[in-house]
Length: 364
Image 1 (cartoon, helix red, strand yellow):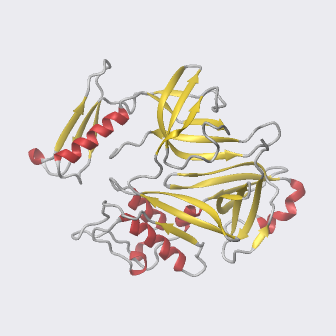
Image 2 (cartoon, one colour):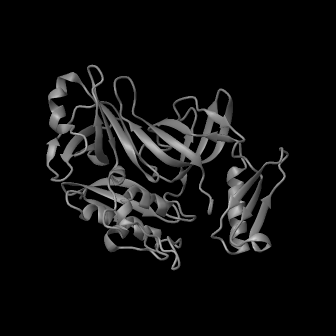
Image 3 (cartoon, helix red, strand yellow):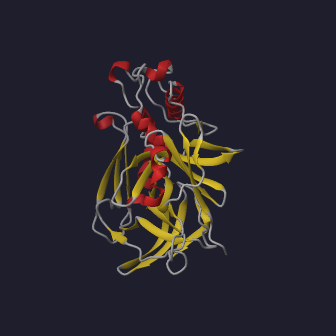
């Protein structure tokens, strides 16, 4: 099977003008992440240095990656810093731009304050405010979950507000919305829309991704390197003590515990917004299940394989991992929180590095 064909090109962030239709990069890696913009890196060699002044102008040029004519990644070049005979380019997804923009008018231009508002809407409002300002439109569209999110930002008594005299960063507003207990998640995606490279922020609730029974990653099959299996008790617990709303003896509480032949370890779960014992018990059970293991895998590198073709997974997916390293084995479910694609180059085949976290559990 022929290796995938990659193409990299650049456009002007404001006008959309194509600056380089086929930018000659080597050492390329790129990919998305959960609740973050993702990143891309590549090298421009000396014989193409004449392209740098316009095609790699940091802060105003968008860098794109295409795989077999499918648009795969896009973002803003933030740095082009020469290192000897090479010019490394560093780019981040569109979400990185929110860290360079602030609320100059207060309450996102009058959209707030938010007296108990769906945080998904607050994320959309932050992007709408960002892009309505002069020279600030990146052409990003925000897709919200159809039924919204039951979590709420602010209360009628204490609305969530941003003050114009404080100039708060818009990245902080978005972070506040996703940090809520039971709040939404987001990631980025790109795709051709006719001849235009479309760009989207996808907001999901209760989660992004799903459990993928159709995919498998295994040592000796599609995992290419020895996998580091980390044994750590720092986060381990088979006893979870959960506290909810209230004060003193009236405070809502729940305990979820099992005996598993190991030394007893306890974890305190503080959820002051939970007002009923049943919900708190469910959260405690999910947290205990998540914490009741010591062996973890933080990262794997895989090749293209029918068991899990490159690009067949999504950010947030839970996938089955069967890995064997020099110091142990792991067989279980993990969640993909980021992934980086490494195009084939020289003798190195195309590969992807997946960053992993414990599998998703409701309420954890």
